[in-house]
Image (tube, rainbow, N blue to C red):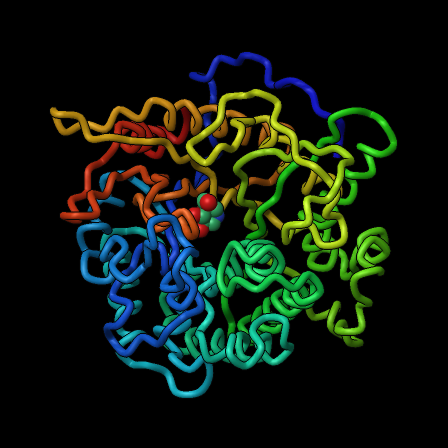
Length: 465
Ligand code: IFM
């Protein structure tokens, strides 16, 4: 948390950038964003089916019903991964495909799909890197209270054990949750994501139960002999526009609600006192029971960091609209006029360097992976069949260099997953934002490797820039 400044990355000779031997180069997707086949193979409804089918919730009314049809086209997608030269594929399991009710009996067809996918990857020498939860909660669990209800954490741990029993023989790397901040605060505070609820205190309870579910799952899978267990969080440096006390306090608050509310319980076993105090007018922490934080603080083998941009804030006034910043609705977010991606996110590779070094220096952290980084641009397929996405290549190059700088200063960074393998369903933005290394024509499902994908294939093979 510092005050805003210009880019600090000195120009570097990028041809010198080499990564350590064994460095993991991967790419990532998530079930609801790519699979489609929403009504096939015994899959039950998720909160994202309900949400995306509710008028006005997504751009153009887009849904994940078909998405990239990865459910059927995964063999072709594995071939694309092989072309990219990636050693690991990070994907998520759709809980409602495995347990349509969110509890009890497993759906054999769903388990079989993931089993085929895993076998197909291994046959091509690509390691599966599984995320157990990337936002598609079975709808029956939301109907029973969702993540603000403690029971959902218990159900999550049961699901983790059940699927580990079936796939644990072939999967080494297990991530419990992807970006619990989004599940809790976009899902339950400002309602921009499923399930679309706007209840600030419920969002804070959701955050805790997500972390509790994570800790319970880690303990259970550890007992079952799982090799590598971790969590993925989305982190942002938070700067204040000026050094005034009010702006600095705004930055402290947002850093607390964005970053430390997850990092502290997971890596230190306690909630940050200032965050608890900031939230006191909204809720007490009575939902946190004795022993919970020890569970949340169960040691991990890795921490996944997703990085996209930096937040710059100042003290301001609340707009009155539902906000993700529970109890700090008056903080305003400022743009600095840097180039942006199609998401409107400022391009700031130094923020990745700062994020990695901060986690490494301030916390007793396990080895780190960048489990997501990438950019949306308005890509088009040219008449000659090429996608000339120079913006994405430059974005990635800058961020790879920033990660390398963190590595060279002693951060134990073990790998990097580009978001995303394929253009896909970008949540409330539907199909309007393209993040892929591979372009997808949603009419025909034709896949086209973008120029950035060809370039990434050179990186993965050279293990450097
Ligand atoms: O598409 C998402 C992904 O599901 C989670 N992390 C951020 C990406 C881009 O918004």
